[in-house]
Length: 328
Image 1: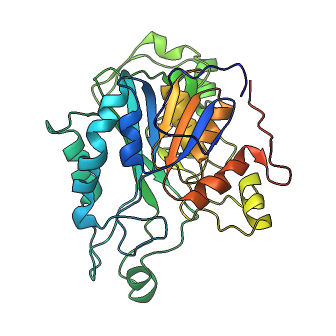
Image 2: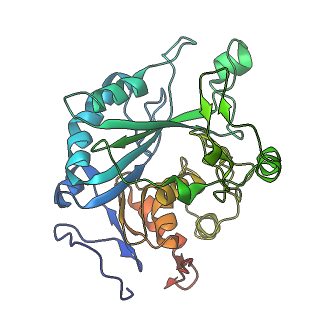
Image 3: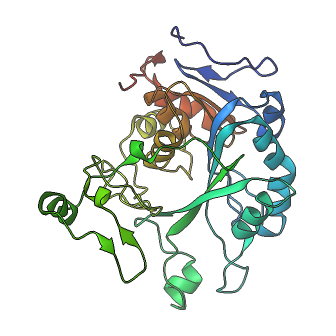
């Protein structure tokens, strides 16, 4: 470890590995959460197993039991460990009703339950992650009967413990479009619009970039957020993690989310030195992003193979030596 001092200690569990900023645990997150102190986490950034019709190797609940499973085991613990200014961000995909080309409402039911008096979270904002590279599914309805279009969007719920979570959209500004640059240069007419909105003189101020909407849209993996539809192709192919899995003959985690997804929310909702938790750690994408952005992080993951392979996001698999380089 470096001279970075983690803000608190977890005594009941031994980490599988650690880095300059974080700890990865191989354990059941249901029990692990109970060991985390109250009001200690700035951001829970996670993608829990979805309620899919087919069981996956990484484990997933069916849609009929999903909401009760999540609320009973995780919801109140998430709220307990978050700081008053903290946020819970959940990437969660939809599902289909078994045997029919109609959609399950389980992820909307989960949102309503989380924001009810039973738990008491607040919906700060909803986002949408569009993956243009997603395989057409379900095959029966999309490819065979041709009665539905490709399902390529996940909802991302941004929830908060209180009505005023920490957030700063100035940290996720996007480049101005050519039309806005022209307006800033040539000026525009202020005053009321037919919609009822009033454009003030301050609208002509150059703030260094545009405030993004909640449609998250990346033109490619190196671009910044464009709007609140997150268009992020999930096409990782040459990362150090995948290279290590291939060399060691390990199957990579089959449901990794792309690094740009946690990157946006970590920048938007936290500061360097804050603590980020992913209780469904998978291949530790959240941890890798947090490390590069100088945030402390914790992940818990039940599958030992996934935790072992995730180590090579930070370590050279050929020498087992730490190879993390964090950004400035």
